[in-house]
Picture 1 (cartoon, helix red, strand yellow):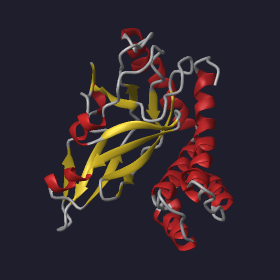
Picture 2 (cartoon, helix red, strand yellow):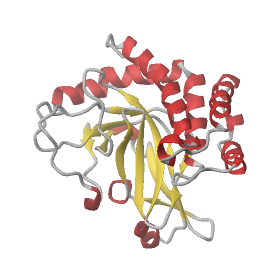
Picture 3 (cartoon, one colour):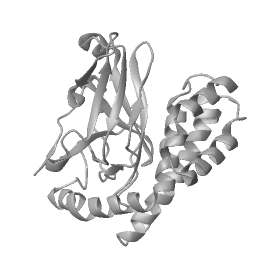
Picture 4 (spheres, one colour):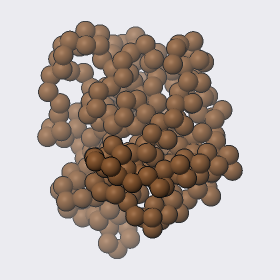
Length: 267
């Protein structure tokens, strides 16, 4: 049995879109462990790695809302965990506490939690715990010429899911490298240039040793290619973090291409 988690915080809702086809459904591609959220004055955020499940549909526009396609055998596959000052943990209601929006086409979504949620639950920091891959579907907007209908959901729950899980299992080096690069990216500031020590700390805290030697090599190559990049103009477009985002998307893109080939679709 399938169900869509309900709409999240209304403050993040998108306005009605143009009469275009609904964008692609996505697979959360690199679970295993926790993704730590970085908190500023207004919210806490972290990028989550994804790839496209429907190559025949358009890429999502930046900021398009996504919901989790919950499966009966995946209860608790993705959890929002809060940590209190005494070290205890509390699982927060993901559907009412967080919002998922497209960040870089189909390769990453941003999970955002408004700062008041921390105070409401008495926690000082947050992580997303992903125990297994989950699917995300775009939130419908007025004017969709081709919405995600029952046939689409049936395809996602069967063929797409099986092919995606098989592809992930067959690419441990790329998926592991994606996790490392994602965690490095999330571990550095998003609004200013990073220092060499911040980059090295982010690399160490990403725990590359937990992955395969192949994954470490791919991720280290990406890191070395970006570690001397300094911001020129907009730090979000030309800094170390944005460079690692490009590397991240290239790595997970290899997995996405293999999935597309498996289901007989173009990349």
